[in-house]
Image (cartoon, rainbow, N blue to C red; front, side, top):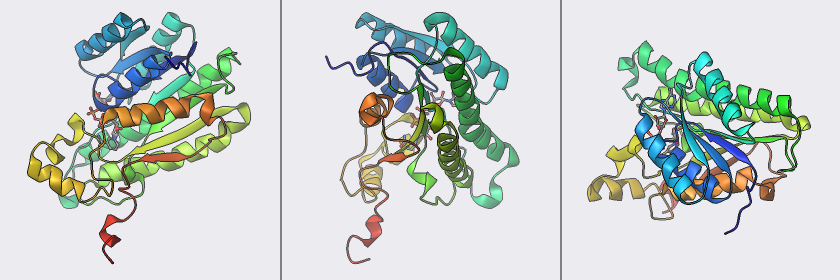
Length: 266
Ligand code: NAD
């Protein structure tokens, strides 16, 4: 098996389901030892860790609310205690609380910003501190790699989802500004912007044939994305194959950002 991440240690937040689970699996299959963060329910994360371990990998589940500073600290402490350090951090946790703008509550605005944006800030900050603390390792050309899970909605406006789109737009500029700040230390920070990926977060967009057909009108490539599509992108961004890629968002969206409404003469 191709093991571009052999000897490396990864942490993936929100990895008990969906994209995070697919990314943790792909990183493990590429040779990394993986810490699988979950928020509320330990069991799916523990099952995933067991499945990875059963295939000869090394993984464990670690609980934390990424919007809570003390819990993020405890999560990094647990990873360092178990694996010694971390080389790859995927800030993936996210949620939606959708509402028409005039009905959007301050509580739902805050929950989405605090989980999606502040959660990635706290996760990335602890990652940089840990890379600096332990110094260079001979497992990668970079001192460390951070991948911020963004969305096509870092550039596509989304009526009825103002809090979510604002959080993803914020992630884009946080990622780029951080990448600029830490690149001289050979820390690579990049983002992935998934399009429509089949996960629990957007079940309502694909769980009937009719809804799926409507969704696919937005996807020039003509299929919904799978978590494995994002897993492969994450492995590449985490590996030395992408060593000169710094501060970029990789869109993995089947062409969703190509203004498909203009395909037929607009
Ligand atoms: P998901 O609901 O399966 O995964 C989200 C994960 O985040 C869950 O495991 C959840 O437990 C975790 N989470 C939520 N709040 C948390 C908190 N406070 N602390 C720690 N973890 C928390 O959905 P998904 O589609 O896999 O989403 C993963 C990421 O991908 C999100 O950032 C989402 O915005 C992004 N994304 C998804 C799609 C898509 O089409 N599925 C498209 C673009 C971007």
